[in-house]
Image (cartoon, rainbow, N blue to C red; front, side, top):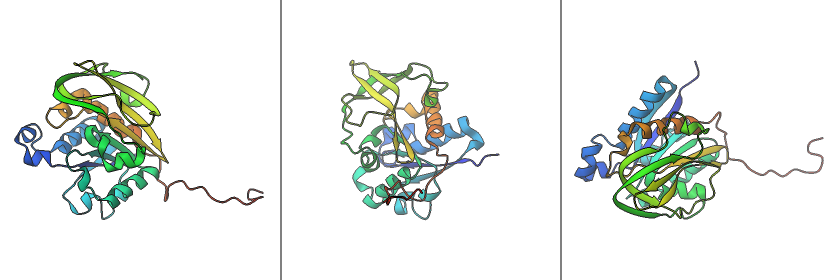
Length: 245
């Protein structure tokens, strides 16, 4: 049997503790629902642990990051509280092969902006818009078993222009009640690693309880999972004349 994919679920875990409205939807934290989704869809193919902002090293020290194959990341109101050295370590681990699944407002996280190199800004509105998540690449592994569209009755609107580099993989585009559209399911290669961004998931709505959203999370974990992780990111080495002879 192959070794399970080692998944770490990183959640800021602030809203669930301070906002009654969020706690009523995710009493044990959003990460508990992600874990349930991965275990339901992937079973023994994954091993899952969680990490949160308030833990020492944001839960990613003591070898946790170095023993992670796939890292999920959700942040919102505390992006600035993430230590620069932790964000840099995560980005380095991705460049060496670890997969990253960035969720919703993680588009503004230090980690995501480090890896994409742009402002990652977007248009937004939080007024209970209906979101339709349309599959634009039905052959992509992240879209496997996912209906088109996924219907999300209420959600925060994210709209174009989304200031990110052109995706290597564009899997989903969302449309909203107000007419806006958004590239909400995108993949990039970064060094030896893969990044997948999936936009649905504002904390004020039960989006992560949606069965089709949970299927996307499981598919994304499999897609970004590495075949191997390198000891260092790619470097350009000096090659004297005749080095291959």
